[in-house]
Image (cartoon, rainbow, N blue to C red):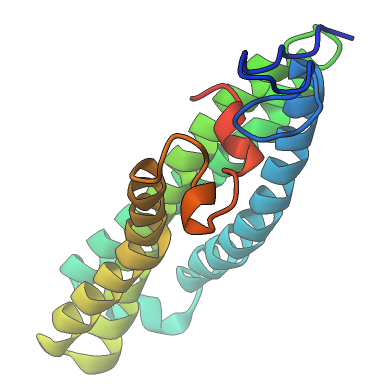
Length: 195
């Protein structure tokens, strides 16, 4: 394998990453991060596949012919966003498979993470677009826009605002890992390469 990271120069144990406290090489860290990413992708991919299957079936329903031009356009945009989402969230699997055995695991983790983040952004658009289509057909009024707007805000808060808030809060902790205020050392994710 590769070299173990050196200590932090402040009396830390050799081979210990000062940010995470873990004893792992770059390759071991990449393997662990890849496993974590796969678990995250399993959740996202399942939801995308169900939503995309639903979207593909809609066009074959008898009521589809009754949709207005605006609703058909929303449907087309939704299907295209769903396709792009599926591609982005399945992409890391292909990337990993094509690069397996080439000793590029750390780079694979970085690019797979980037594709996953792109996929989450596309999933946000797909969910909002699908909600807009469904609520326009169900309600036939402007309330649909308000409901979609509220739900879009909720998605943004859950998927992006909370994690960014946690990062900002962690960045304000003392450099010693927050131990002075009873905090714990940062998660091992902080020690890996940044996409």
